[in-house]
Image 1 (tube, one colour):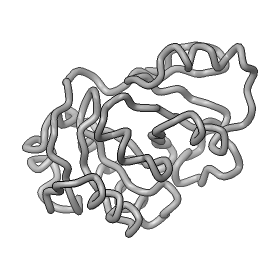
Image 2: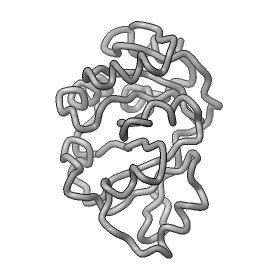
Image 3: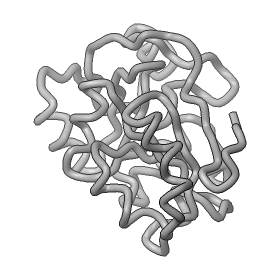
Image 4: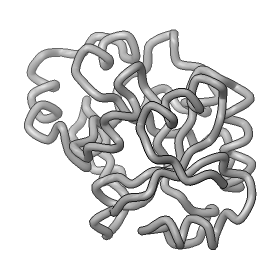
Length: 181
């Protein structure tokens, strides 16, 4: 696993279909290009995660949201605006552009706009997968040492940094406002 010194290095690896680990405002994340089926399949296998559970997309700004979702009433978008950027994930009705290997068997797509500098910079060129850095059923990694301990192989690169700790992001349904996690 290569330790990266710059965001530009990470962006280059994402374009090449590589898997990276990076800090977020809550826990360390694993990411890749969501439109690269081979990369997403590698990530799911590494985490031992069922494809039908779906994954979270991380975006850097509001312009990236529209192509990923079906239109929703402006009133329902107000709750999202009050929490973004930040550690809250919202499930939206997905657009036809979302591949099944990202959404799984779900009608919606989970999206978060991070306030963490590193996480936000990683998706400046487009959304990336953002899933907690852990094998399914194990505790999420909070630092690079914990990432390496869980994944001695399989991740192509890691961005050193800090996560504030705590639980992975809370998830809400944008249409109902109901908390899902």
